[in-house]
Image (cartoon, rainbow, N blue to C red; front, side, top):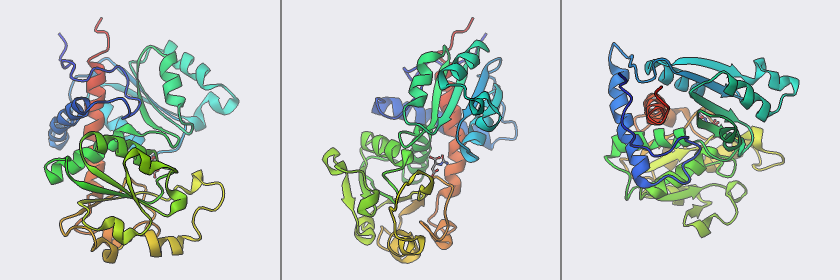
Length: 315
Ligand code: NCD
């Protein structure tokens, strides 16, 4: 007997938010809602993934995403193996395809992948027999981050449709921004992008996103202010004059937050650069949902793993 849930999510992999429908997204969020309760109990262990092998394959350093996927897999009863690039043959010159073939031969059921190149996770998914989850590929997508953000918003605002969400900061280098823009637009939110022009993707207005280079105007009337980390490791060349100057114009402090609605919430995917894109006062303040985002991360990842497991062969 298996307690694998009936499939509510008609996809074998989760490679991005692109291509998912509003019902797909809502199904995952509803599933995640139930997992929040599981994680708040003393007994947190389910058996949905009992007997299954989950490999976390991380080519980029990660603390919260990797541990979140690890905890999620373990709470569902899977055997979880962490493989990071520092300890792998990739350092010895093995290609992504060879790594995929090697891991595939070990017959895992789920592979969670983070890679510095956009598209690498899609490529890997074509080379293995199991389900693949994108845990961030370059500046492309980070679907579970967008889902956990949506779950956090939904629980605090009662819904997503009709909300004004201001995504602020280093948008051009951010997979979090891209996945969130797709998800929030699909679920009916109004998405604004607030950044210096050097950090806005060219031509983005044509896709229906309002852009602002003046942060105070961009925050005016916002229900959610989503801050992004300045991705200095992805910048070659000078995108911002100095971090001090950046904070003055685009750092979220109490004064700028005052332009958003009085009941607005502040979010950040982490890791935060305090004093660069956000002040400590705001990050730790009453309007901050940053810690709740981390809790929702585990719930969302449990939901995703469970949804994908419903497609795994049972014998
Ligand atoms: C994000 C990432 O890695 O894309 N962080 C995360 O997943 N917690 C955002 C970032 O690195 O700024």
